[in-house]
Length: 280
Image 1: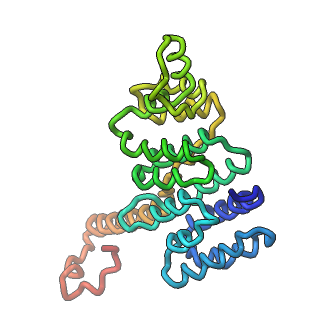
Image 2: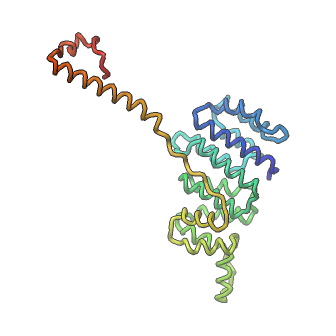
Image 3: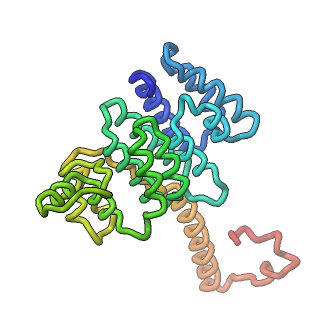
């Protein structure tokens, strides 16, 4: 587990990378510039030096973050790996935004349940690999051995059993129902989630998991996952409108020449093509 000031500086770095990487700046230039803004008393500047060296060599951040597993969590490395896939749709600036929110949540104080719901919602919203993602989540230092074993077991059950049922069966609300019914709890559990999480999960059975995440955020204050920013198409519309206006002007000019009976169609012949001033 890192100190709080490390997470504060990580959140600041990921915020700057998210803002500027989305504008098309090369990642090596950003690391070169932003390393001077990070607090020198933390270990993040040294990690950035290593990342910068690797990016200059291979152009990728993922391999360097794997080597810095003592500083970056496996889930952070997993997000960067997914953003650098040629066949994926998960953008790097989205990964930086997710990592920024996660670091801010660690600064504010986390619970294993809150961290798990946040990280699992990231997989759901961005359609990332459950197998690789849950493996990375299980290695997070926020979880003890019981949590890690349950998360690894989840890889084989997700998709076959409703996620809300899995949460409910691992909650204190299910344990209370067993005790109320006089049934033994042998072979059940582990009971990792609280009673409120269990009730919310039971109320969202057979529904979209995103409804479950939303209810947990409303009632228990769990952090929300940043949603991808829609692409601004305004910059593309202006050149398109300019080309259309040019075509309209050319057509109006032809109609006026035809009306005055001064239209010379020979300029449209192949040998006179160079005389045309109209857009194609």
